[in-house]
Amino acid sequence: MQVKITIVSHITKETLFELDEENNSILKTLEAAVKAGKSLEGADLPSLEPLGANLAGGNLAGALLARADLSWANLAGADLSGATLARANLEEAELSSANLAGANLTRVNATGGADLQGASLVGAILEGANFSGAFMQGANLSDANLQAVSFEDANLVDANFAGADLMGANLANAIMTGANLAKASLKGADLHGADLRGADLGGVDFRGAELRGADIQGANVKEADFTGANLQGTKKDF
Image (cartoon, rainbow, N blue to C red; front, top):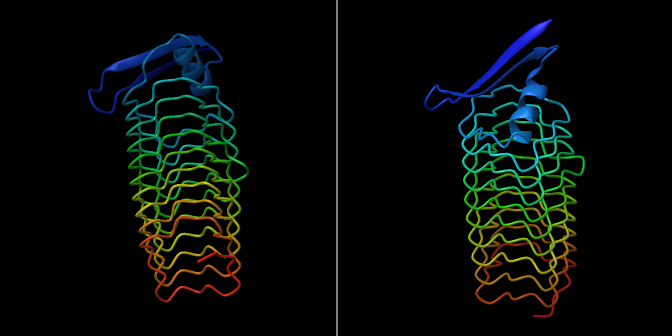
């Protein structure tokens, strides 16, 4: 049976792409649009369920993807800047080198080894999101809202958190060697067992943070505030 699916802009209401073929689906339509190099900027795609979609390199800037199920999707190198992905499922998704600057990722689920290596999340809103076990080496999260985010057991080697708000975040057992957290807020954050060797912690607010068993040897801690922080068993050289 022929099925015609149209993708429209939530901003202009104009048609961005449409596909009319037998046994068509939103997954087929999206993949066809990306393969054809069509821009899906501002696309209206809430509650989408394109499991395992291949949208690598696609332009989805400003798209509405709230509550979308993008688990196992390939979004490597995709432009999702300014997109709304609140409560979306990104479990085991491939987002390496993706542009998520300014995006709304409130309460997203990016567990199960989601890959965000080298991704840009500058100024993004990720409050309450779950990135436990994610691969985020070299990701840029500077100036992002990361309040109450879970990065437990995540690989954050060389990630950039400069100026980010990590108040109440869970970074237990995270690998953060060489990470840049200059002037970030980690007030009340849980960093027990975290590996912060060689990290830039200059001017970081660690007030009330849990650093039990963390390793911050070789880190720059100039002007960092550890008032009320639990440093029991913390490996440090200052």
